[in-house]
Length: 353
Image (tube, rainbow, N blue to C red; front, top):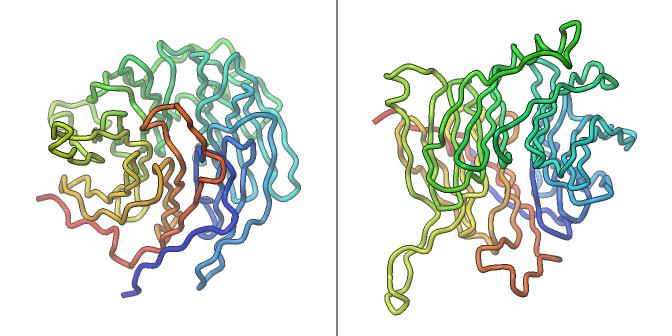
């Protein structure tokens, strides 16, 4: 069995990292978005502990999210300037797909339906048909401000303020997009739920087998839920504490609670990783309800995580967070990107208890 290795990317962003994501068709290609207004494209050199910066793509404002499109040469970004952009990673050409009224928090691409969904702080989703980029997107009004967005093969999960969670059916959205008059289509959520977590949702990730999703909160907890709306299925959902540290007795003891900023599922084994403000990454077995391992502490808060398409690599975005407040906050030069090459069975779960 090949041992795991880990290395630091030599040319990281200059400011807070908002997202890291691997290409859908290239194990070695990685995008990183940052508040320094750039998207960074890296290529991991096979058999080495090195990732080359191939290019960076400057935007007008900080970038809050990035995702790949249909292949490793296409990307989409969510901007603080309220725009949703497509980047041709080969030519560098940037095209505005749509403009929201407030900053765009998240973007997610559905390869099964050639569809891009953006979520904005203006309380809307824009559903774009990427096969016809000049077409007008469908606008869906949301009851709350969206903070996290994730897609499975058939569903998209939107986590909002006030513990609201809406789940939309992707085939239904695709049907609306292909109708004669998409703008007049009536879109309703497939399911409306209340989050299992009592505090603000920080991240959401969908299971690769299309069975359910995990959410995390600012209060050091993760919840795992299933899509199927039966009593039996809903009885399986659970939540647990994580990313906490014991406070010194002289400070009153108890737990120091950190936000869980990032979640990502392993594409092969279905286990998942979480990253927190405590600077740690943990691997979890969702079926067995147990922590598999916790990695060494990183120098700052873990802001973003992504597994490669075959689960060989785990990208870890590390930067200053606001865990200790905003006073004297300085993130410049503190951002780091780590790449972990996993051992063959490092992320393999043991199954249900």
